[in-house]
Image 1 (cartoon, rainbow, N blue to C red):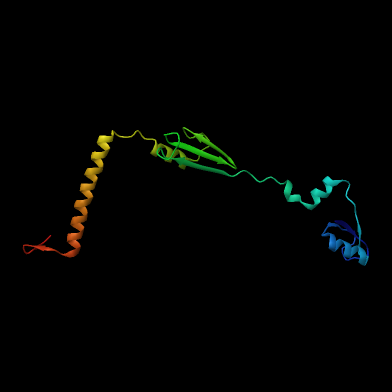
Image 2 (cartoon, rainbow, N blue to C red):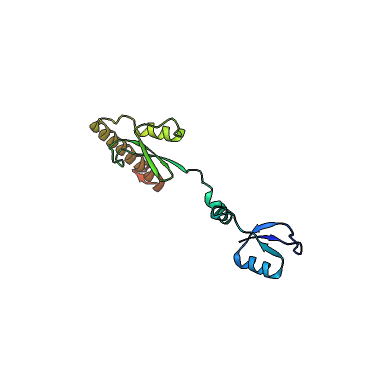
Length: 147
């Protein structure tokens, strides 16, 4: 309800949109008079001004790894509100961190046999390192000498 305060009110001359029950009370007390709206559009605009405000779209970026992507390759994912777009390469507006992550994941894979051999060698190296650390931390003595 929109009312205009009368001279007998401390808010004399002001026009305000208030709850119907409060407006009816002020009118009955003689502090205000009802001010009709021109049409329903004006009433809706006064009652819900935030309903017409449009929030800026939220943009989310991500990179899906090859094995997680349904396309079988590394893809860049851009979500704008409820719309999702997949890119085979980072677009110009992608953040630098997304471009960097895409480049890291999109490196040409090694030959599977070479990659397997590298993993085995890395495992051997880690095992030797763990054995040395464990022996040193326990203070194991072999033949009168500490390892």
